[in-house]
Length: 240
Image 1 (cartoon, rainbow, N blue to C red):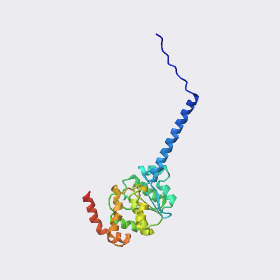
Image 2 (cartoon, one colour; image 1 turned 30 degrees about the vertical axis):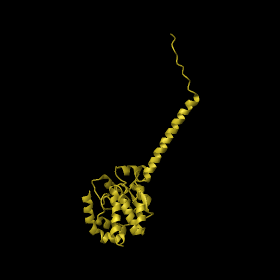
Image 3 (cartoon, rainbow, N blue to C red; image 1 turned 120 degrees about the vertical axis):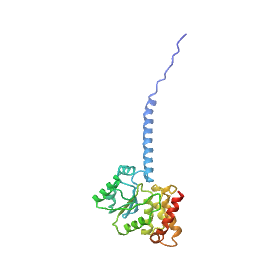
Image 4 (cartoon, one colour; image 1 turned 135 degrees about the vertical axis):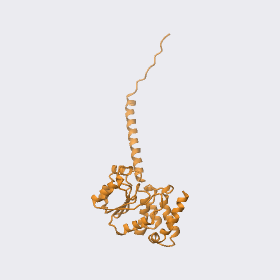
């Protein structure tokens, strides 16, 4: 009985040359997709400090740019930490919409950076998941009225509270129609999604439109909203 033999065909030199080319193309394609994903995440404010121009040369908004957290870490990667932004836009006032707490390292670093640069620092407490308190809005208007420009305001992600304040500023101080201001500032492009709990930011402006009866947003905030706020806040709490 004769043993069978298996013949092996030699791999052509052309095939051998094609293998590294395919590997190189795959690697380059993977890098391209990765960079495209990073660019997309930056575009919608999920990667980096979500630094945005509200009014060129005057008002800017961002996420938290200090501390050891995702937004600050990714902001540093692209040169958007607080020191960079202070110098780039010659910021003279920083408004922190998260409220002040010296127990947090990001807050201590923010205070130190502003002091070192010579910028005024203001704390105003707001939540992305609740209507803004009337007192916080009055503090905000007072800051915009009296503090030196350019101004940078920020929240945690730079999407929700910052979006509300950006729309408010454009309408009250720049005369931008409310719907246009909302389209520009309270948008998914900057990471805000109205169908989430952060939709309370949209609810604030909807409440204004229902109850203003021709009053400007500033006048409504100062006269009507303080009386409405306890009622609508209790209603929202009971519905949750």
